[in-house]
Length: 213
Image 1: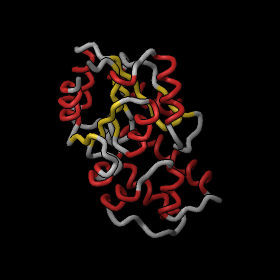
Image 2: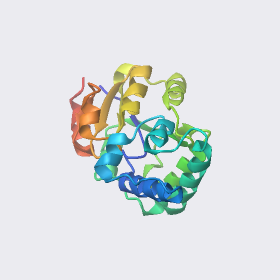
Image 3: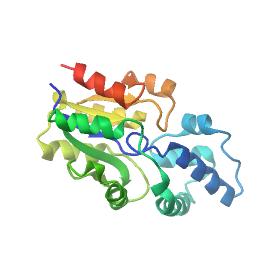
């Protein structure tokens, strides 16, 4: 039976997809670059590491650190407007009632992640969150590997729930199962190409978890 759930934060529990799209176009306007046409295009382009996504929308490596700081400052000033994804509270509480241990592992800077969670104290029974030491949203694989070594979790009884192909890559790296949820930062057709299990929403993801043996 499944006894550990690893959650991604952005796009999975927190619905910041439309917000991220708006901020991307705001940032592009600051540099007089072409706008991203619509939300679908944003979700088609978005990828990890985020540096590759920035390159795809017109920011070269030479200005990546500068634009990353601008984006993050704007994001953290306004992120309180972002709601949780539908079902986030219900599903995480259900997992708690069933005795599943839960943790958030994110490519976000850890201090920013802690600030966001402090604003939303619905997940205070989770294990302490794990995040990166910088704002550049690189890989979360090493973070996930470290958590597996120290948590006592076993791959065969752990599920990683996320919204991007990078979550699937992290799950593969630590040897656990993965459910990717539609409605996040990447399109359903992108997620399905990975071969991962894809859920329509968080309630569907919970059904899949409880069906696993």
